[in-house]
Image (cartoon, rainbow, N blue to C red; front, top):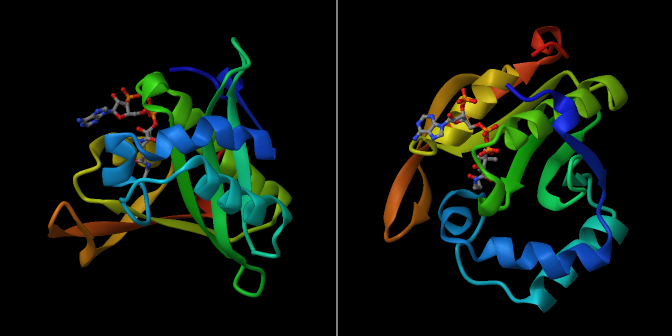
Length: 177
Ligand SMILES: CC(C)(COP(=O)(O)OP(=O)(O)OC[C@H]1O[C@@H](n2cnc3c(N)ncnc32)[C@H](O)[C@@H]1OP(=O)(O)O)[C@@H](O)C(=O)NCCC(=O)NCCS
């Protein structure tokens, strides 16, 4: 199992959009990543990224970099950060060319460390399609537990699909693999 040092997180820069917009149009990303499933353009992505970097949204978004090649391979998010309840929603996206090598799990652990140790969060939660097996496996390895099923929570490919609600609490988080 790769160690967390196989990746590093860094702040996004606008020029990253030239790479990341292409990922949004990958079939697996359109099917499984949160949000809409229509095609995006470079201009759409630049607009979105400008909001992430310069906007006043309660979000943290990091670029995921491979440490061996220094390539940009994904993004990870803490969204809807709520400082009263000390919770936030996790999301992640890895370029399909780099999936299945442990980078997603390493990045998930690094983002949880940021959320619990830097931001002092108490609970980090997410939603995932019940048929997104690699994501569910990766999240469980990071400490997330299924807490319920959200019936017909997304509509993609002409049908409604259930999602799991998963969460990890600060007392459950461990930096050990
Ligand atoms: C989900 C995602 C972030 C995972 O990243 P990744 O780098 O591929 O994940 P990892 O390689 O760290 O771990 C995947 C695990 O799933 C397992 N896996 C892969 N396919 C599987 C399947 N069909 N059934 C069960 N487990 C599976 C892998 O074996 C691995 O587990 P292991 O390390 O115990 O062998 C990435 O696939 C992705 O970005 N997908 C598209 C967007 C997306 O779905 N985002 C999440 C939305 S909630």
